[in-house]
Image (tube, rainbow, N blue to C red; front, top):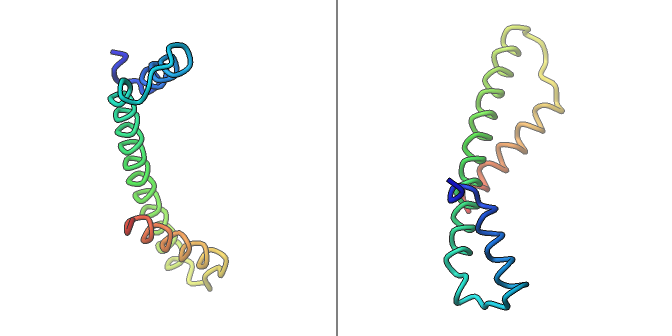
Length: 92
């Protein structure tokens, strides 16, 4: 069960380096697993964030159409910046 917890691999690497003086040749698997956990977590976080932005943008557009008032310039700039950040993150 602890194989699903990334801290397990960090502890193995920390013990190996500080207590035993082990080099990277013995700890490469734990390092690779920590990188895999980080990549999976980042990918999941980006997907959830994009869905949240899409949902909020849809709610914002719906509310502005309903009110028939002028859009808030601050919100417009914020949405443009967020859209740019999402687009630049997907290009990496």
